[in-house]
Image 1: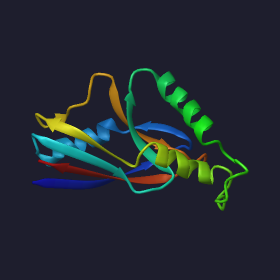
Image 2: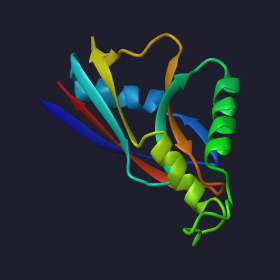
Image 3: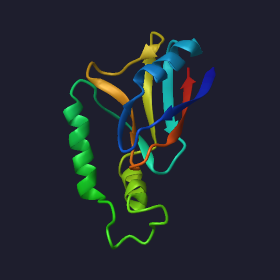
Image 4: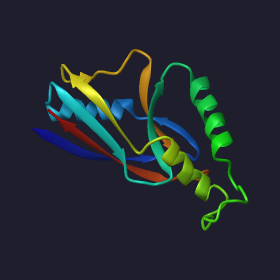
Length: 137
């Protein structure tokens, strides 16, 4: 049995957006009690992550880490058609991930106490992002 929904989120530019509640709602609507939920973002300049959901400092610090790994406007980049954050956004997406899987039990996400699912926008400008949520059980 499987259930699939495409969610759309507006981002405000670079940073994280908490999407756990929206994914949990799809799991509830699926009627699947035991299985997996696969979450996939259909873009190459943003990503998904599971991280600390209590302290926003964690997400700010993660942004600092990826800024060091993939800085905007690096003169070594060739791909910059959409501005200085273009290639760095693609690199950040590759360094993180565009998909993740979470177990489902009792009809709910089996995340840990301090875990949340986040859409991580890597571009500096706002975008609309599509996220495919597939529940399999």
